[in-house]
Length: 362
Image (cartoon, rainbow, N blue to C red; front, side):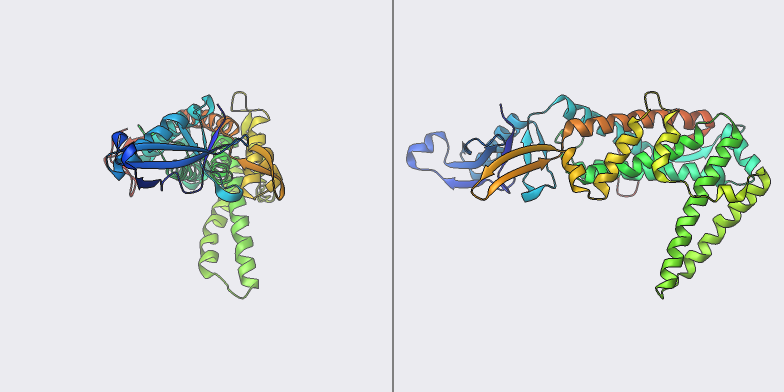
């Protein structure tokens, strides 16, 4: 059966009209929508009947939902919602989303702390700082959780409501910082040598500082000095300097910014099967985040056709491509969780949910 497309707007605004006397034996009202096959076939009219407008509309919704199972909403030309039968890839995404929702909820509900006599506690003692590497790692975990929650909220659907809403650009864009933060946190936590963990975290803090200084310089040259940014930058600057002195690091080498594109390779040795997959998937996410049209089209699901004004290509989110990404991200989260536990980053569950979040138990 070909994939179907709901005509714009008809998925939530079904046409309802009173029926003729001849049709009233099937219901006093009829609800109608149009389905257009992506293979270029004829538009199909779907009608259902009911004793009331709501009954007719509800029956039509059930009929459409029963046929398509999963709905994706791409940010493609025309912005038409696309409908397709649920696939193995859709199932992977839906199940992974539920696991990520629970992971984010657990972190939001919990107080994070460092276990006494753990690797993390020892790293803090050696570096002389509770920022490096402990709070640096905590910041990456927070970024991961925040973007995962944003993606869960964006895609819609919850437990018992398996609708899947994927977009052509934004889902990948939300996962780019997830992959970057995963790579950074794993790069810090992965080495068994305490000195290496501290050094990697110090490099990342120095990289963040260099970016913040660049911002301050740009706005200053534009005539809008930001005194608060300058004040905030003074803190990390002292921390980087003090850690370098204490650990005997070459401060000039530490202050060379870390290229974000190198983080996937740095973390890959700690992820089974990571190899080139980490960089490749990160690059795909980056292409979407930077609106690189032809790269996005290459990784989307394309449908070609012709019309009175010439040929056309319709591009929608490809659930199989995204399923690979989300499965890899899930594997990365498992690696991160293992490393956090191994180094002594612990959770103390609290009763309160995240602001605006659900109070349900995990």
